Amino acid sequence: MKKLPARIEGKPLAKSTGRSNERFSGYSPLLADLKSRVRTAQVKAALAANRELLTLYWDIGRLLRERQTREGWGAAVIPRLSRDLRAEFPEMQGFSERNIGRMVAFHREYPGLFSIKNRAGRFWYMQQVVAHGWSRAMLMLQIESRAHARAGRAVNNFALTLSSEQSDLAQQTLKDPYVFDFLTLGDAARERELEDALTTHIQKFLVALGVGFAFVGRQVPLVVAGRDYSLDLLFYHLRLRCYVVIDLKVEEFKPEFAGKMNFYLSGVDAQLRHPADQPTIGLLLCRGNNRLTVEYALRDMKKPIGVADWKARLIDSLPKKLRGALPSVAELERELE
Image (tube, rainbow, N blue to C red; front, side, top):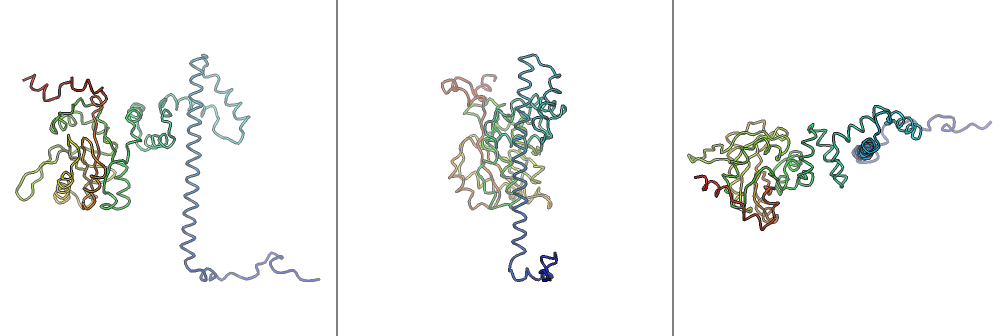
């Protein structure tokens, strides 16, 4: 009888010596890269599936609540619905009575979440709710101000002045524009009036800035070469682990604003920054800016600076013919005097 080849008998044809990979230069880095790509694809697929399921569960909660309101259905419909859905979709595990009750509670708690038509925008709010524990009131406030559309839009030079990790986090931390809908300032307001109004409403101001900002002080003194200077507003960001200097302007951005901010950041880094802190970041809040002008002004700056617009919604949203009819803060002060 003819002997079968070793591989047919279930034996390896040749014993591996572990040296076969040596013939392929750069094989190990390639394998590591492919493993990383596969894992990344798996995570993305899982996130996409989770987004679809989250949307489905919210929609089921919405439909049930609508029927309960319109038809007078009570909670007794949930056990029947659970049985029927599990019978139709036995491979899905999410249709227990408890889970369907959670779907109803999910829609009750966040009824306006999916008024955001863009799926990526909805997912952004979901991430923020999970990451920061927003209440329903806070979530609705952020949706109304379209926070997802403003995050990460401030013009800056972070990629050139910060590490890649710090740059990405700082980029997402800043918005453009900042909507201070609790202010009633008109176009003739002065910078000190703006500063007064923001610090008077410091809690709302912190909400508008976003999660992580801790207020340090206003008109913080800075002494350089025997001369006194003042920082409009100074914050410390708990996630960025750095000071944030905010300079307020009631006019459109000018290139010289960047030079002054660069000076302030050097002073804070030298006098206030702890060795464990990340580099201090500057944020110029202006009443309008030209993107190209800002990019030119920041291009060769050595300090990380961002520029964003600010808006006082209550005034800016009025028809133009009515804006001039409202007195400015300065005019009201004169009347009171």
